[in-house]
Length: 300
Image (cartoon, rainbow, N blue to C red; front, side, top):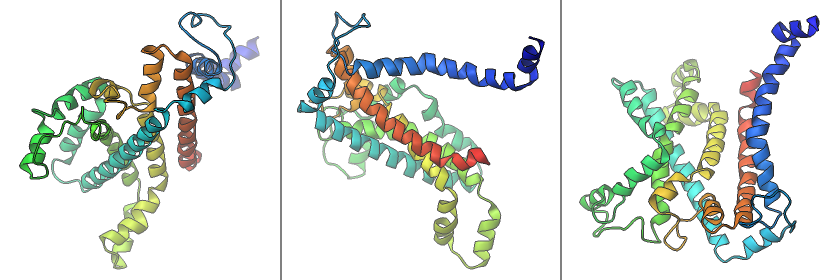
């Protein structure tokens, strides 16, 4: 017993405890709900059987019923457009801002701090702000576009089926740009300045240094940021609830909001769990990309 207590203080037992405690916490708080959700997607679940553990097993019937619904493919397509557009917009704008603040001009630190405001704001607050900005009658965005000569009349971003999904996408890009900027700034600061000095002495211009030094040296950072962006975007729910509620006529509906709507509005818990399981698969693929992108950093 004395040897066991000694190892718990400063030996191998202490290392085991450090790993075991957070692992047990993750299994309890994340693993069991995840397993429960997967099991529920293969069962028949309604309001009366939700509180029970033993429910009728239906196999893949929930999956077949889900993909037989006419709205499934359009919602999956909306999810693809929303995820791709959000990740591209957040990355490109975030990379541009990271390169801008990398110059370290006077006031760069103060201005960088202002961009972090969007990152720390709750999603529902961001949704409320963008509700006003995207208003068809008195929205700031319509005013700017009309004054710039880009449009002649008001665009009803939230209620027009042609624009509703892009309205949420614009808000999500604004919300996630600061996160991309921070991580990309860290990646830029890790590049040795000697490489740029040597390339400049060899006659390489700005674009040549960017394509041959900056991008290759940030390959792992870019992979990690894209993977994290995919995970966070697939988890985005607040903006849809605050701006469009998936409408009109499912034109801005995506899988994460649809899963909530099926479960807690239509009380079809089995199909809601089925959509969540499908989303888990995409999140796991993104997690694999993230782990592979940061593998060498962990080893180093």
